[in-house]
Length: 212
Image (cartoon, rainbow, N blue to C red; front, top):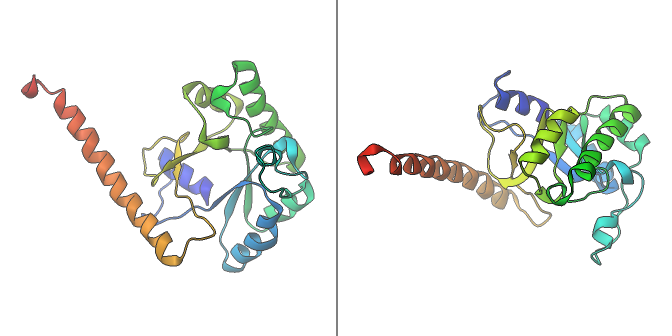
Protein backbone atom coordinates (compact mmCIF):
# COMPACT_ATOMS: atom_id res chain seq x y z
CA UNK A 1 0.00 0.00 0.00
CA UNK A 2 1.01 3.63 -0.37
CA UNK A 3 1.06 4.00 3.43
CA UNK A 4 3.60 1.18 3.73
CA UNK A 5 5.68 2.71 0.96
CA UNK A 6 5.60 6.03 2.81
CA UNK A 7 6.76 4.30 5.99
CA UNK A 8 9.56 2.70 3.96
CA UNK A 9 10.66 6.07 2.59
CA UNK A 10 10.60 7.48 6.11
CA UNK A 11 12.62 4.50 7.35
CA UNK A 12 10.07 3.38 9.93
CA UNK A 13 9.26 0.19 8.03
CA UNK A 14 11.11 -1.87 5.44
CA UNK A 15 9.63 -2.69 2.04
CA UNK A 16 10.73 -4.99 -0.71
CA UNK A 17 12.76 -3.57 -3.58
CA UNK A 18 10.06 -4.32 -6.16
CA UNK A 19 7.11 -3.06 -4.13
CA UNK A 20 4.45 -1.13 -6.05
CA UNK A 21 1.82 1.32 -4.80
CA UNK A 22 -1.19 2.16 -6.99
CA UNK A 23 -2.75 5.63 -6.99
CA UNK A 24 -5.66 7.33 -8.75
CA UNK A 25 -6.20 11.10 -8.95
CA UNK A 26 -9.45 13.08 -8.76
CA UNK A 27 -11.79 10.30 -7.57
CA UNK A 28 -13.65 9.56 -10.80
CA UNK A 29 -16.74 7.38 -10.64
CA UNK A 30 -15.20 5.23 -13.37
CA UNK A 31 -12.43 4.27 -10.93
CA UNK A 32 -15.07 2.77 -8.62
CA UNK A 33 -16.86 1.02 -11.50
CA UNK A 34 -13.90 -0.51 -13.29
CA UNK A 35 -10.66 -0.32 -11.30
CA UNK A 36 -11.74 -1.06 -7.74
CA UNK A 37 -13.47 -4.41 -8.45
CA UNK A 38 -10.47 -5.54 -10.49
CA UNK A 39 -7.99 -4.56 -7.78
CA UNK A 40 -10.13 -6.12 -5.05
CA UNK A 41 -10.26 -9.36 -7.01
CA UNK A 42 -6.47 -9.58 -6.86
CA UNK A 43 -6.26 -8.27 -3.30
CA UNK A 44 -4.39 -5.14 -4.37
CA UNK A 45 -4.79 -2.00 -2.23
CA UNK A 46 -4.74 1.45 -3.81
CA UNK A 47 -5.02 5.13 -2.91
CA UNK A 48 -7.56 7.52 -4.41
CA UNK A 49 -6.93 11.26 -4.10
CA UNK A 50 -10.20 13.18 -4.08
CA UNK A 51 -11.12 16.84 -4.57
CA UNK A 52 -12.96 17.31 -1.28
CA UNK A 53 -15.06 20.27 -2.38
CA UNK A 54 -16.46 18.47 -5.44
CA UNK A 55 -17.23 14.98 -4.11
CA UNK A 56 -20.32 13.64 -5.89
CA UNK A 57 -20.00 16.32 -8.54
CA UNK A 58 -17.99 16.57 -11.73
CA UNK A 59 -14.50 17.51 -12.93
CA UNK A 60 -15.19 21.23 -13.23
CA UNK A 61 -11.47 22.03 -13.48
CA UNK A 62 -11.29 20.01 -16.72
CA UNK A 63 -14.61 21.22 -18.09
CA UNK A 64 -13.38 24.81 -17.79
CA UNK A 65 -10.71 23.89 -20.35
CA UNK A 66 -13.27 22.40 -22.72
CA UNK A 67 -12.66 18.79 -21.73
CA UNK A 68 -15.39 16.18 -21.35
CA UNK A 69 -17.49 16.04 -18.20
CA UNK A 70 -16.84 13.08 -15.89
CA UNK A 71 -18.70 12.19 -12.71
CA UNK A 72 -16.91 11.93 -9.38
CA UNK A 73 -17.51 9.42 -6.60
CA UNK A 74 -19.84 10.45 -3.79
CA UNK A 75 -19.11 9.96 -0.09
CA UNK A 76 -21.11 6.74 0.12
CA UNK A 77 -19.13 5.17 -2.69
CA UNK A 78 -15.86 6.28 -1.15
CA UNK A 79 -16.82 4.75 2.18
CA UNK A 80 -17.76 1.45 0.53
CA UNK A 81 -14.48 1.39 -1.38
CA UNK A 82 -12.50 1.87 1.81
CA UNK A 83 -13.74 -1.58 2.84
CA UNK A 84 -12.23 -2.93 -0.40
CA UNK A 85 -8.70 -1.75 0.32
CA UNK A 86 -8.93 1.83 -0.97
CA UNK A 87 -7.22 4.59 1.00
CA UNK A 88 -8.66 8.07 0.51
CA UNK A 89 -6.25 11.00 0.36
CA UNK A 90 -6.61 14.68 -0.48
CA UNK A 91 -6.26 16.29 -3.90
CA UNK A 92 -7.06 19.70 -2.49
CA UNK A 93 -10.40 21.36 -1.83
CA UNK A 94 -11.09 22.71 -5.33
CA UNK A 95 -8.22 21.34 -7.49
CA UNK A 96 -6.13 24.53 -7.63
CA UNK A 97 -2.40 24.93 -8.21
CA UNK A 98 -1.21 25.21 -4.62
CA UNK A 99 2.15 26.81 -5.42
CA UNK A 100 0.40 29.70 -7.21
CA UNK A 101 -1.92 30.60 -4.34
CA UNK A 102 -1.33 33.11 -1.56
CA UNK A 103 -0.62 31.61 1.85
CA UNK A 104 -4.22 31.97 3.09
CA UNK A 105 -5.84 30.19 0.15
CA UNK A 106 -3.12 27.57 -0.04
CA UNK A 107 -3.62 26.77 3.64
CA UNK A 108 -7.39 26.60 3.14
CA UNK A 109 -7.02 24.10 0.28
CA UNK A 110 -4.83 21.85 2.41
CA UNK A 111 -6.51 22.16 5.79
CA UNK A 112 -10.19 22.18 4.82
CA UNK A 113 -9.82 19.20 2.48
CA UNK A 114 -7.99 17.31 5.24
CA UNK A 115 -10.71 18.15 7.75
CA UNK A 116 -13.66 17.37 5.45
CA UNK A 117 -12.31 13.95 4.44
CA UNK A 118 -11.30 13.05 7.98
CA UNK A 119 -14.66 14.00 9.49
CA UNK A 120 -16.90 12.63 6.72
CA UNK A 121 -15.19 9.26 6.33
CA UNK A 122 -13.98 9.01 9.94
CA UNK A 123 -10.47 8.13 8.80
CA UNK A 124 -6.94 9.44 9.07
CA UNK A 125 -5.82 11.51 6.08
CA UNK A 126 -2.08 10.97 5.80
CA UNK A 127 -1.47 11.86 2.17
CA UNK A 128 -1.91 14.79 -0.20
CA UNK A 129 -1.46 14.65 -3.95
CA UNK A 130 -0.62 18.14 -5.24
CA UNK A 131 -3.05 19.15 -8.03
CA UNK A 132 -1.20 19.49 -11.35
CA UNK A 133 1.94 18.48 -9.46
CA UNK A 134 2.30 22.14 -8.44
CA UNK A 135 4.10 22.53 -5.12
CA UNK A 136 7.04 24.28 -3.49
CA UNK A 137 8.69 24.36 -0.08
CA UNK A 138 5.94 26.53 1.39
CA UNK A 139 3.31 24.00 0.28
CA UNK A 140 5.32 21.15 1.82
CA UNK A 141 5.68 22.95 5.15
CA UNK A 142 1.97 23.81 5.26
CA UNK A 143 1.01 20.24 4.33
CA UNK A 144 3.10 18.90 7.19
CA UNK A 145 1.57 21.45 9.58
CA UNK A 146 -1.94 20.50 8.39
CA UNK A 147 -1.39 16.89 9.44
CA UNK A 148 -0.29 15.13 6.27
CA UNK A 149 2.57 12.62 6.60
CA UNK A 150 3.50 12.66 2.93
CA UNK A 151 2.71 14.05 -0.49
CA UNK A 152 2.67 12.76 -4.07
CA UNK A 153 4.00 14.81 -6.95
CA UNK A 154 4.26 14.29 -10.71
CA UNK A 155 8.01 13.74 -10.84
CA UNK A 156 8.82 10.56 -12.73
CA UNK A 157 10.72 7.88 -10.85
CA UNK A 158 10.93 5.42 -7.99
CA UNK A 159 10.84 5.98 -4.24
CA UNK A 160 13.70 4.70 -2.11
CA UNK A 161 14.37 4.55 1.65
CA UNK A 162 15.63 7.91 2.84
CA UNK A 163 13.79 9.76 0.08
CA UNK A 164 11.56 12.81 0.42
CA UNK A 165 8.20 11.83 2.00
CA UNK A 166 6.52 15.01 0.72
CA UNK A 167 7.82 14.50 -2.82
CA UNK A 168 6.81 10.91 -3.55
CA UNK A 169 7.55 10.10 -7.18
CA UNK A 170 5.17 8.30 -9.50
CA UNK A 171 5.09 6.57 -12.88
CA UNK A 172 2.12 7.70 -14.97
CA UNK A 173 0.01 4.90 -16.45
CA UNK A 174 -2.39 5.76 -19.28
CA UNK A 175 -5.22 3.92 -21.02
CA UNK A 176 -3.07 3.34 -24.10
CA UNK A 177 -0.30 1.61 -22.11
CA UNK A 178 0.36 -2.06 -22.80
CA UNK A 179 2.11 -4.52 -20.46
CA UNK A 180 5.28 -3.90 -22.48
CA UNK A 181 5.09 -0.11 -22.34
CA UNK A 182 4.44 -0.25 -18.58
CA UNK A 183 7.44 -2.57 -18.17
CA UNK A 184 9.55 -0.08 -20.15
CA UNK A 185 8.45 2.81 -17.94
CA UNK A 186 9.38 0.88 -14.81
CA UNK A 187 12.78 -0.01 -16.29
CA UNK A 188 13.33 3.61 -17.28
CA UNK A 189 12.65 4.67 -13.70
CA UNK A 190 15.55 2.46 -12.57
CA UNK A 191 17.86 3.97 -15.18
CA UNK A 192 16.68 7.45 -14.28
CA UNK A 193 17.51 6.89 -10.60
CA UNK A 194 21.00 5.69 -11.61
CA UNK A 195 21.43 8.84 -13.72
CA UNK A 196 20.31 11.09 -10.84
CA UNK A 197 22.76 9.40 -8.45
CA UNK A 198 25.64 9.75 -10.91
CA UNK A 199 24.77 13.37 -11.62
CA UNK A 200 24.63 14.28 -7.91
CA UNK A 201 28.03 12.69 -7.34
CA UNK A 202 29.54 14.57 -10.28
CA UNK A 203 28.15 17.83 -8.94
CA UNK A 204 29.75 17.14 -5.55
CA UNK A 205 33.07 16.35 -7.26
CA UNK A 206 32.98 19.69 -9.07
CA UNK A 207 33.04 21.37 -5.67
CA UNK A 208 35.86 19.21 -4.35
CA UNK A 209 39.16 20.95 -3.63
CA UNK A 210 40.84 18.73 -6.22
CA UNK A 211 39.02 20.60 -8.95
CA UNK A 212 39.49 24.09 -7.53
